[in-house]
Image (cartoon, rainbow, N blue to C red):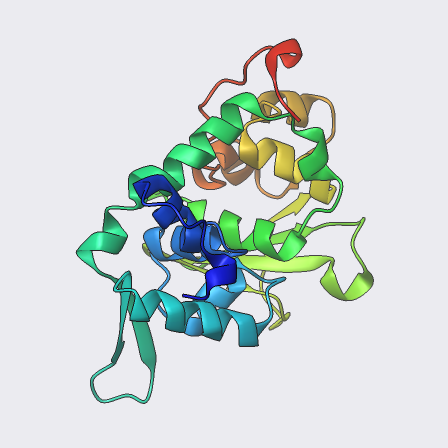
Length: 236
């Protein structure tokens, strides 16, 4: 490690912060902890990070013993796996997220929303349901996005959910219409699902038997159940 990136302290917190607090590192760890293992899947979770920088960060985490890199049998694919030391960072990564959900103001997060990350998060949190057909296709239409980014599809097949950003002439079962901000607020638990439906911020078009149970398959962030502190106590 270069002298310029070191705090020069023996304090364990300082030693950990020297690499954990480098830009994007905590988000890469989040993706790995949430189950991403391939380079492309990790990249989709940090869509605004350059692939060159992602490669560099993964190399550093490998050298430090946080992750291991290995090939997939009978394939040219490479996967990344957390070591026991990396797995033990779960309480650190999710602890920071929990604190942020409870104590931070939400307005700054809404100023420059990443629709790609929102859809990737929705795919991860979507909940297959035995009463849904297989496949079950949901089209998300975000009218505030540029035309080429307005449509995404979640395809439920059994216990798997796939995110598609290209229209393969899907036979859509339900369409979800919302602005990126309103869908983010519902996903994060900042706006109750029922309120978004009632106020027309979240529109669902399709057979009633599917739209009535949308709160069961749509999914929300793992942080959505954490109650925010009163606004006057939050930090910006």
